[in-house]
Length: 245
Image (cartoon, rainbow, N blue to C red; front, side, top):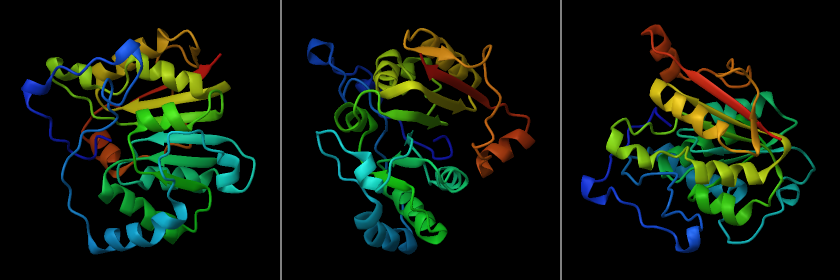
């Protein structure tokens, strides 16, 4: 999420390795950039205490989310939840849905663990792993009611655009995991990236736009502190919502 600053690799690593046979891999598209981050004592404690309760281990095999949550309910995946405030709030206001948050960075995972514990949230689980591999290997085709991608790193320099998360191959993977009528909701505060998102999602034949261009902000997506600050400064935020046809 754009609330967290990410340190780009050196320009020497601009070229990404190709995948054999065109297979989507976490090397061909990465959902994250590794960076160092300090963890508070509370984040450490909640990470250690809560992940055995709410964490899902990555395994290269499909997972039965009904069994994980102990009920049959719509399943929504959020990719890159940052520090988790919006994720926890969405889970709180939508108790009838079950959520899986994917994030690699330990401070954010620890922060969301804390929010899950404090809020008594039973409909939220965490996978600390690369989202490409999680979606590709663990999520069965046609099984998700929704996918959220909020404020991914915009990689503003043109030569870095290839590192952006919202690209055709990854959108195709997401679309294959959505059930008919399932939605993909992206949001960004970077206008040029917003237009790219709209273009990429419009090019995916399994998806159809729910709006004429950009969508109004759905009520379930809360305004973050970062977003509120940007709005006060006159910055825009763009939502894109497509559904599986």
